[in-house]
Structure formats: C-alpha cells, structure tokens
Amino acid sequence: MALAVSATAAFGADTNSVSWLDNTISPVANPIYFEDPRITSEVRPIYAYHFLPNSFSFSGGAVPLGGDVQVMAVQLRYALTDRLAIIATKDGYIEFQPAHTLGHKYGWGDLAAGLKYAVVDDQENQLIVTPGFTVTVPTGSTDVFQDHGAGEENVFVSAEKGFKNLHVTGNLGVRIPNTFDKSTAQLHYSAQVDYYVHQYFIPFVAANGYTVLSNGRNQANQSLTAVPLNTEGYDLINFGSCAARGTTQMELGAGFRTRILKNLDVGAAYEFGIVHPVGIFAGRITADVIFRF
Image (cartoon, rainbow, N blue to C red):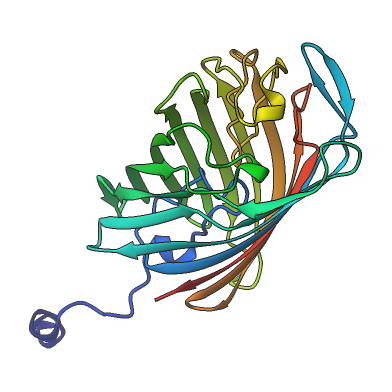
C-alpha cells in the first residue's frame, strides 16, 4: 500500500480517469442561443429545416405562408484555458422559401461571436456554471431578414447539474439590440434533460422559449415597414416587430445524440410550438455533427 501511495505521488493521478462531463452532451435544439456550459474546442456543422405555419397572423390581419426555412451553418469554439473559450455561434446560409407569399429568398446570415468562462467547475458535485456573451454583427443579407439595425449583444449564463447518468442543462439570457427602433430586446431561456444510456444512444427532451421585452418599428425590410407584426423570428431573425412586446414563443422538443468516437458526436432533434399563436414556428428539425480537438 505504501508502494502504491508512493507511486501515485511520483507519477500523478490516473490520466485515464473519467470526468462526469465526459458523459454529458451539447444541446441540439436552439443551437444559436442554447450554449453548452462546458469549455471545449470544436467544429460544429449544423443543418436546420424550419417549418413555417400555413398562415401568419399579425395585429392587422393574416396572410397565407406555408413552406420552410433551411439553414446551413458552422459553429466554432476554442478553449483558451480549461475555463475560458472563444465561441462563434451564428453564421451560415439561409434559404427562406414560403409557399404562398413574399417569394423565395436566399442569403447569408449575420455573424455572432463572443466569450464564455466557467466560474464554477465542481467535479465532486457534478456542477458547472458558465456565464458569457456574444456580439452579433449585421453582415448578412437583407433578403433573408439579416443585416438589420446595428446588431445586438447577448448576455447569458449556462449551467449543468449531473445526477450520475442523468444530466439537467439550462440557459438564461437576454438579447439587447444596439438600435431599439429596428430590433426588439428579448429574454431567452432553455432547458434540457438527457440520460446517458450508452455512448451510441443518449436521448434528451428540451424546451426553448423567447419573450419579447420591447417593441421596435418593424423595419426589417422595406416591404414590412407598415405591417404591425406581433411576433418575432425566434432565434434566427429579429424583425424589430412593433406590436410584439410581452408575447412569448415556446417550443418543446426531443432527440438524441450518438457518440461515434470519443471526439465525434452526431445529434438530431425535433421541436414544435406549444404556445399559441406560434408565430413563424410550426416546427423544426435540427441535425449537427460535433468534432472536438
């Protein structure tokens, strides 16, 4: 026994020891604003297929809509230390394809990046708490309701608590526009519960919501300046709606991740609106691949 203690002191702890975080997963649904509290270096291609409702209601009436929005993007994260990471959370190409109105539009999304820092990383109690922020720069295409206003800041805190193989992850944040006339301030909140069955099957349920805190002047597009929108564009679009303050969009979803390799995850999720009116959110399928290095 004395020999074993001496050997441990001389050569250090077992480098193959497993952290509770090794069996946790990143959120799949709401990928722009539901940030993983873990500090990682990764490349994450994402594909989202967003179902638009058959009709779009606003305070001045309703118009037929239908169709879909498709998004192809790549997120990047880089761990500067074991507690601090650079995150690039929004970019990509957007295909806006309503079935009945406005016509099909294509273009690039805005860019968003920032930092996050794990202020609590308690291995013994299986708890991690990570505040952070991102800055959105309006570099995208107006055809797909990007390049709007002067961008926004997102201030958030993410946390995760483990109970052996069960993990609960949450995120709370606020989106603060640089110009309140062309964008709305929004509170966002997310929760996910997952269970590590096996590395190849980690199911989860998730809920995501947005509450609009202020009205804008609805100048997302020249053709919409006179339309009194009473909803917002969920995570991808900030319309600057002029009649949306106090409204909430909330979605419920489920899915799974599979850990093909120790550093390679694949995930899929389906979400649907649970608060009516659903705005532009009839449903969404999200899939991603995460390569960590």
